[in-house]
Length: 333
Image (cartoon, rainbow, N blue to C red):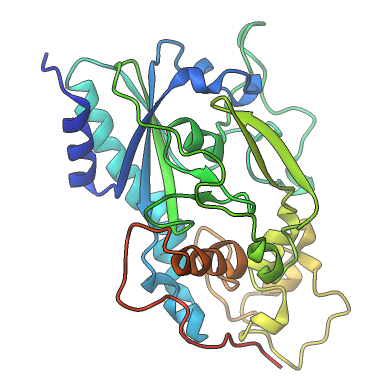
């Protein structure tokens, strides 16, 4: 069996398409809730590999201009989660296993069973009295749902900003992540302490169209031996705004359609939004999508405003000739 060096693994990961590859110790998950602890997935794992994939700025340019919305959802969200990143993950997992070390991929999607421990809220009609049960008293129920954000901190990939988004030194919040657990003992990267990027300006909270990021309410955690604090994100409001339910930031909303409460999506994906029959009724019946909700809001606060702020401060290592923010933002009448 061929042994390998950490530098060679990182070189291979980037050749496969990962933009960032950093590594941390599994011991960084000490204190994690049992249902979210990846050490139950692979008890012999010594290292966690964090792989970051940039969201190219051009994916969000059309939303900035208010003229082209579909590419971010297709190529910057569902396309990355369900197609591109799993393909790269497999190549790297095979690379490690070809050298005699087992490797477990952690893709960026929902766990097989919802156990009230994922990063995502679930519709009320999904929450059943029974989901799954542990195979033995000492184990959590399947599926263990590892927090992407916690994994990013433990693998030294980035820090968690006030918005609860992962921020990396290269691309700020313009990044999506996947991870690999392996029994190979690799060289670990240095942690990225809280405050390295996020200065708590809370621009993300002020610019969020759905007011989903509170400026005065937070959650405190201890991850990888570091004290972490981020906003107590309202996931229902986030999903509501993300999918275009705030009509001032949704050019697809039919102005003739009247609705008493814009925030009808608080229960997630109400039929009133797309219409009982596609393309026949509802305020936005013509919006088509595949796996995910249509990304109409485009992360106005947590993605775009945050990135522009970090860029203006000179904190991002990936540079451009011109700034991301180039003119006054649009807003519907």
